[in-house]
Each structure stands twice: as structure tokens, then as C-alpha cells.
Image (cartoon, rainbow, N blue to C red; front, side):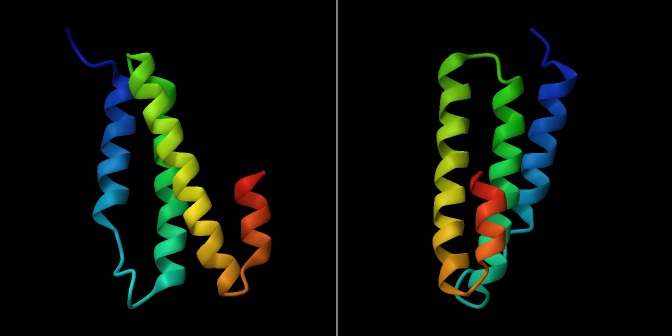
Length: 87
């Protein structure tokens, strides 16, 4: 069975963004923004994975990434970003 092109693209983008992971202790705000980018990638991946369990897992991980990012951003005064990304 071959991998559908949209799934390949979503996996490629997930790997690309994952490779850009900043150091959380040195830049917590940058790390929070990276988490939001990862959440977007996971949402895209969830649209294209082949199995329901994988789709659910990607969606859960995306939601958790957004929650953690929101806490960090709120702690650093970035409230407008929180509203945009948790809506």
C-alpha cells in the first residue's frame, strides 16, 4: 500500500517543524510558538492519516500542545495569541 501524497506532505511538514524545536529553557515564548506550529501540523496530519486511532491521537496531541502553549504565553503577557489559537 502506498502512502497518499497529502499524508506524505503532512508528515514531511511535521518533521520539518519538529526539527526547528527551540530550547524551552532559553526561550519559553519561542517554544510556546513552536508548540502552536506543531499543533497546526498535527491538525493537518489528523486530516490525512488512515486510521481513526491515529486521527484521534493527533487531534489530542494538538489540543494539548495548544493548552501548554497558552499557559506559557499567558504567563508572558501574550494574551491576544491565546484567543486566536484556542478559538
